[in-house]
Structures are given as C-alpha cells and as structure tokens.
Length: 377
Ligand SMILES: *Cc1c(COP(=O)(O)O)cnc(C)c1O
Image 1 (cartoon, rainbow, N blue to C red):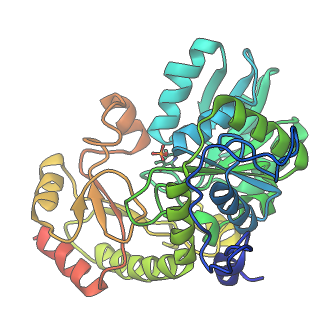
Image 2: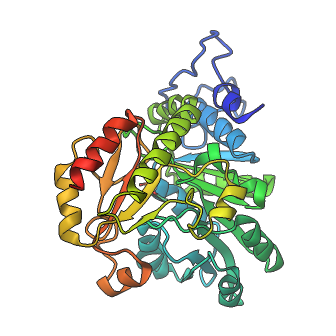
C-alpha cells in the first residue's frame, strides 16, 4: 500500500459488527466478560479501547512500525517513552529540542536521576564524542524548531547501534507522510499529534510507534501502568485527521515553496530558514530521508520591533503558539515559545529577536503572500 492509500485503508478501518465505514467512538470504560477471565479482547479502557486501538494500528502502519500507542498529549508520549529508562541512565538529546522536552528532562526527570545532556546532533562527530558510559538513548528531532536544523537519521542509527542505544525520533515536524524514521533505523518514533496529524487545532494528543515486539510489550506496560492514555473521542478525531494528512501536507508544502520564494526576494528579510532551500545546511540529507520539506518556515526581519510590527499587521496568519494546522499561524520564538531560554543562549542558537516563525496552512497562497507583504511594508 502506498502512503496515500494507507491513510484511508491502513490499520483497522470501519466496524466489523455493523459495516460502519468509520470506526465508532467506543465511549466505554469497562467490558462484559463472558466468564471469569474470558473477555473478548478488551477488559478496561486504560489497558485497551477499540477506538484508541484502531488509531494505534493506523499510526503503526504509517510509520512502518510494529505497534502504535496513543497518549493524552505529545508530552505524555515523551514522558512514557522516557519511563523505559532507569535512574542513572543518560539520554543524549538534540540541543534545540522542543521546549517542553527540555523542561521535562531538566526540571522533572532530573529529580529522578535520569541524566541528560544536549548536543548539536546535526554533527555526528559531536554525538559520538558526547556518549557516556551510562548513555542508553539518543533522542533527536529533525527538522528542529524554529531553525529547521537537520539531523541525519541513518548516521544516528549507526551510532546508536554501535553503542547499544535506543534511537528515539520526534517526528512531529516532518509527519509520517514525509518521513518514516523506522525505515532509517530508528527504534521509536513519536509525535505531538496535536500538530499535523490532528491538523485542525482541535485536539491535544501524542503518538508512539516502536519497531519491535519487545519494545511494544515494554511501551504497553508503561502505557497501562502510568495511564496517560488518549480518550476515544480524541482518538476518533485523530483518525479523521489522518484521512486527509496526505492532502493537507501536499497543499501546505506547495504553499510553503511559494512563500519561501517570496520571502527570499523581499528586501526586509535578511535570512530565510527552510529545509527545501538549496543552501540550507542539511538540505541534501533532508531530501534523502524525507519525501517533502514540510510547512515550517522561519525568517529574520532584523529586530524585535520590526517582528512585532509584522505580527500586528497580518490578518490571515493567526498569532498563536502551536503549528501544523489548516490555518496559518505566526509567532516570534524569542518572545513566545523560546522566551524561557536566556537571551545569550538564544543568540548562540541563532534565535534572534527579529526571527519570525510561520506554520503554513492551506489557505489560498496569494492571500497568504499578500498578507505577509502588507506586514513587511
Ligand atoms: C508540540 C510539540 C511537542 C509536545 O506535544 P504536546 O502535544 O503539546 O504535548 C513535542 N515535540 C514537538 C516537536 C512539538 O512541536
């Protein structure tokens, strides 16, 4: 089955009992047992729910994995994956990971002695050099936020294999339509499904896919023990989102290419960050490991004042955090998503005060370009 077909026919579709073409929302917590210890596959909805299970099978299909798991948020998914590790283990992470992942490691899991360090994973040599005796996992994000830095997944898989590390990939930005990290050697792939997979700014959720039966058993054990599961209504919304994921990503990518071209030719814009640009560092790697470059674009307008002015003037780009939806969103990372990072560190990372990030939606691209043009006047 090709990717577009999988989004419609992958996993469990419809309902065996009635022929319903959409998987029903099984709004239920417990299940009647035919006799003691003799259930029909479900006993309690934390352990398993048919609607959630249908979602979990389709995401496993999309990521070419062994099994999928749905959680109440992207952070619940990441936390549950970290629960596979033990205290005094060490996790090596991409230095500009999502802020919530940074906070989880530095402020929460550090209290349980789960060790971490951050490294620029776009340089494989730096990754090898940062591995410690107790390193057990390599956690990467590619492309990253907001500078769209690219990490070579295959190279990371080689390093992980050599040092017996779990390779975990946050695939939120690329989506399972463009990039399937398990095919490149990842052990675990995870998503904030709140973003592109849900795609309509109406559900908070997280998904995990693993590449082996052994990991599937372990993640299910954690999911059932910790209990951060996704409810049936939200599971259904994600399945509905997945059905149009391919179409949305194609439309978003087409719009993004035109917006990048416009920004590159605008005199108020000093630099544009997008993996599809030929001289973007990692452009070739991104082209090899993903079928598309996505819908996240960052660009620099020189100062915080100018950035604020752009955000004040645009009307189709909604000023909001989050990303990956049908509506275009705009933000200033230095003042919003990355405000908690000290100013000096932000400058080091290249997150200047004049940096604007957009998440391109599916509106008419001429309207979007006209909007940015007004903003940049
Ligand atoms: C949003 C996001 C998360 C966290 O997901 P939530 O659904 O908000 O909990 C994790 N990783 C990335 C890359 C994200 O963009």
